[in-house]
Image 1 (cartoon, rainbow, N blue to C red):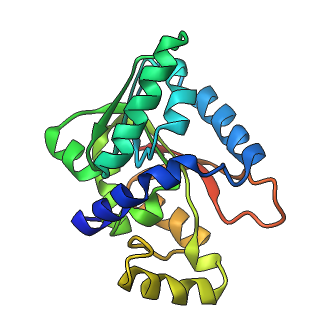
Image 2 (image 1 turned 180 degrees about the vertical axis):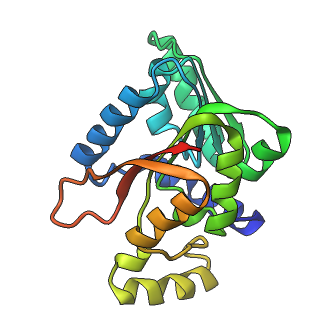
Length: 213
């Protein structure tokens, strides 16, 4: 994930912010389960987009830093936070443009790292999981919900590189749900939960909670 992806998301930010959530019931289930896992935690979210999940989760954590590679996304998230504060929001939430690698290099440690619709967009999976592991205190939680392109229709997998060539898609890493679980375990985690929260006929986004060993 690099400058090209940042520019893609900068261009897409306003349209992304205006898009409805595709599976509201599945999203609500993910939020509820995540809130139950992070009470009082020092939490960081990677790939937060325009802050929709962060604004719903921050009051459950002790502190919540939400990050994204796109400055355009973070600007919209900050606008939403300022609006929320005017109507009584009091969660310990801040937004920042950053990547997992940048945070890992800074040496910060968290009780929980969250990544929703993130891992398939973050570049080399093993490297990103390594950064995430280094961000966690021993026993800390990595909580994710991830589209698994490897389980999708092959035509989708063929279309993504072509769309990227013409600037219509970001970089996407292809993996299956099974290989994702294997990669998380190999990165030094114990998987505690591997669930499907989608309310539609087929759910290709496993919700995984894993503890850093």
